[in-house]
Image 1 (cartoon, one colour):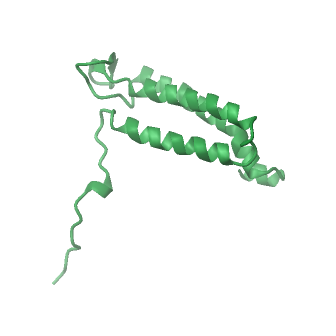
Image 2 (cartoon, one colour):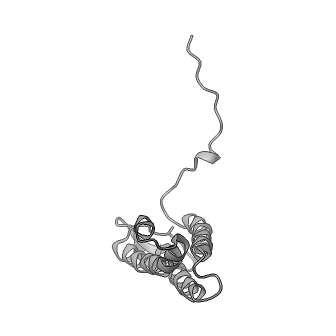
Image 3 (cartoon, one colour):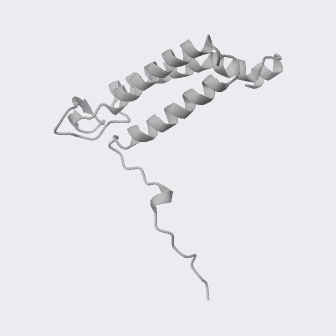
Length: 130
């Protein structure tokens, strides 16, 4: 963004232009996560594929591959939209990032590692010092 501003480019057009590349990188990167075993899905007795979480191999939900497919779909979708009416306004970037954020929140629930959310914790009164 700073480069685009320094060159006098429209920031919205710049962000729209790099959006397909960003999500293509997500798609490629998550395949790497699958191959190394990080970001593993939860073990399942139902549908899943054999993979490891770097400790135990088991039939797991392929969370990394699902996110890779979402990244590839978003790269394709944003690539088509950039050439259309929305291209150059920054709206393609905003829409694509919003769709990715919502889909990623759904995928986080499929992953093996526990993720504590501060908004789910019970509110506790602050300790008083006497």
